[in-house]
Picture 1 (cartoon, rainbow, N blue to C red):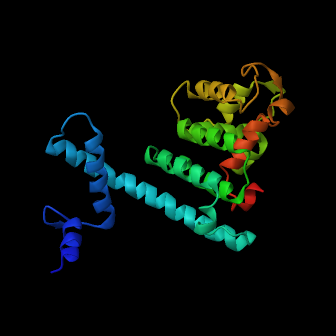
Picture 2 (picture 1 turned 90 degrees about the horizontal axis):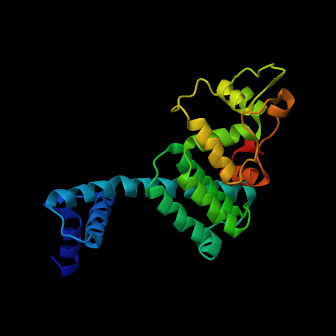
Length: 247
């Protein structure tokens, strides 16, 4: 057997067990991470790192595959040159791609991974605000919960959100924004107090205006759009350009 073949066989096995490509990369990931730690690790600790490497690699590969599929569909639909070679020459896309894959490593919620993939597709199409806002918005995806995105989508168009989900639109003479959210989302499970935290966070980030969330106002006002210009830009950034209903 040649030296090259021996090397290949050694790399594709661990303790005599044949490894898949993902498992092989996961073990390399665990070993690389252990080198960065300040103290030597026990065998058990090294096994934990290697085991963690498997879902991390699978998460990255799934996002990469879904992004590639989306880019192919965008090319077919919009007749744009979105080949890997072309995108590799776009510094904004390369920066976004690297940031998205770092964020994907530490997030598992389906809504956030979809938002990351949609963001990359929009960056590829140059369907985005300036590059500084792109980086800010990617950071929002990283730190937001799925509940942030749900409430922000609701606030952008309360009437449409309720109609799409079969929620009856209240016929009050007046009410508060917090009260309307509680009624509209009464069937969605979340911890007590989360609505207040999310609304305050969205205000702090500039995605909704400074308003008294508990103040009484007319129903017409409550059902209008509550998102700022920046909030609308963020929603567009995380919405798939392949979603016809979003257009």
